[in-house]
Image (tube, rainbow, N blue to C red; front, side):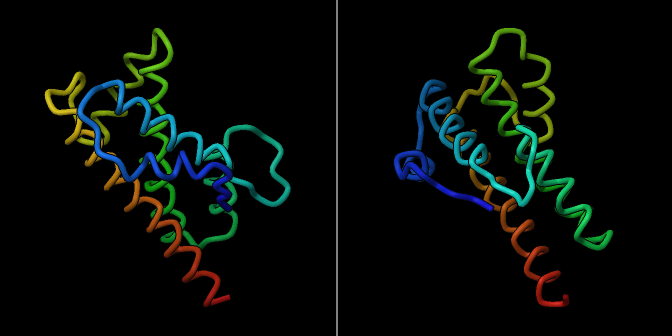
Length: 138
């Protein structure tokens, strides 16, 4: 599903950050990786929405519910990136931050990044686990 064509983007995800500009750089790198998702027969440009639909069609209800929550967590990270790069995205960012248990603006951008990174890893792990369980059962 994922192809990482630029190792620089993946390397940025491992770095800490101290400023909002560094957070923006990390969020952009992560969004860039998510934008490279490829699904069989994919037509649209809404990668995470497409992934959710793809998995809803292939997973049982419990697995699909878990992956939907995980995908919504990933979408919240992308929404935070949009907040930093597009005017008028404050409400969406506040909702995304609240979903992730964050307050914007932050007093500690490093902690904000660490929490976002950790929750994103958890979300990706849930998606992987549910796909593996379904593949093994099928």
